Structure formats: structure tokens, C-alpha cells
Image (tube, rainbow, N blue to C red; front, side, top):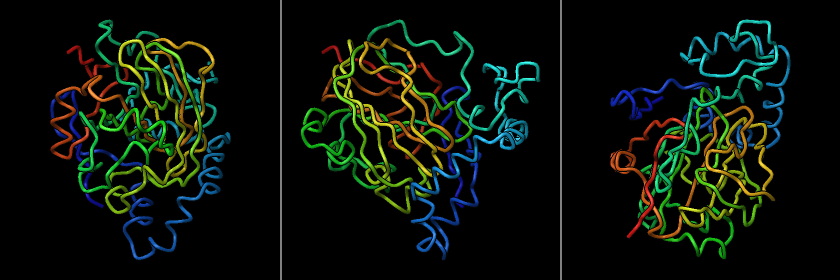
Length: 305
């Protein structure tokens, strides 16, 4: 399996990503058996079944080794429900660990209203304006608003607008947040498959983001106009959960929801010329590199012209 190289905004270096389930991804997408087992791997039933297995008490036993192997800074997070245990053993199940929360104040969002904070702790691609030449990854398939949203009427607002795509790995914080204050105009689900969003899978199967199951919210924000907020299911994602009451106003930095076990993706589309992704994200995207960004750190700027 080819190495996955990302740019770390904080070390200012390119780094090789440690991949959880590397052998399984390679078997499902880049082997002689791929055609035979690929549909099974991407099936709803297998993802839900495997996701449910992460709710068992026995699944919690693998948490300490997982933390050590992937160098997770566990002291940045709140402990699990087993309060009297050391933090690495405090999570009753693997899913409880998977949806762990950051300690209060650890990931602040920008106070400058024209600065958009990262809606997920993830690896980002960004485009100033999606068009017929826009592909993610660079060798992947063109992503149109209509295909992503599964709704031509909604897509008209976002065609030609900016795009941010955040890929979450199994090792990451798996809650996602609102990047600005506002209200939800519409929310719906597009049924689909549960393919891996690993870069290897994306290169070999180029239509994953428009084939996978998606949960979509059209939101009106105070500083960035209308946004399409798209949560993409992936292999072994048990569920996509909305923790916010979408009938109520939301605030900048507020948690919107979370993914149960599995690697996942959040895509945000904007109206044309409303905002622009950060310079480092744009440059790295042109060089086929994702940019690793912490939750809440600046990822885009409002266009005030």
C-alpha cells in the first residue's frame, strides 16, 4: 500500500500517516479479491454490524494499545465512564473512546467573525471555486454540488462556490461542529454505500463521495452565507448522529454531531465568492497534499469585497 503523505500545519512538515486497518483497505480495494469482496465491505449491513461490535465491553480492552500505537494525546480528552480507572482504561467500550470529548477550552474557535474555524479535527482539501476541473483527490472524480447534495434545486446555490473537505481518520476526535452561528434551513439523508474514504480507496474508486451515504444540512450562517454541510458515511461507520437540535439556533463552535466507529468525512460547500479557504490549504491541495488542522483553527476567510 502506498504511503499517505499529509502536511502538518503545526510541525510545518510533510508526514507519513499511520493507517488503522491498512491491510483491510488494501485487500478490499487493491487486490485480486477486490471485485469480489468490495461490495461486501461497502455494505450497510457489515458496517452496522462491525460498528455495533464496538459497543461491547470486550471492545474496550483494545483502547490502551490503540492509544499507544497511534500516539494519541489522551490527556487532552475527558475520561470515559469508568471514572476510577486511569484515563486510558476509563472507556467502557471502544465506541465510548471513539466519541471522546476534548477538555473544555482546548479547541477555541476564532473570535474574529470573518475567520472560519475548522468544523472538524482532520486532514483538509480546499478549493476556492468548484468547477468541471475540480477533482478530489487530484486523480479522482469531479465533484459537483448536484452530485454531492443529491438535489439539483439546492445545488444551484453552491455551484461555482468554495469547498472544504475534511477527512477524519479512526485515530481522530470524531465530533464535528458548527463553524459559525446561524440556523438550519433544511436537513435530509441521501442513502448509499459505505466505502472507505482512505486516499488509496479514493484513487481506485473515484466516485466514493457521491456514492456513499450522506447526511446533509443546508444552513444559514451569520458571516459566511449559506453553507451545505455534508456528513459522509464510510466503511465500518456504525451511525451518523446529530447531537444538536436542528430546530433551534446554533452557535459558533457548538457541537453538531458525531460519527460512531470508522473513518469519516465532512464536506462544506459555500456560495460563490462568499469565502475563501486558507492559503496553506489551497497551496497544499494543488500539490495533492491534505493539510492537518485542529478543530477550531482558521480554515477560511470571509470575502469582504
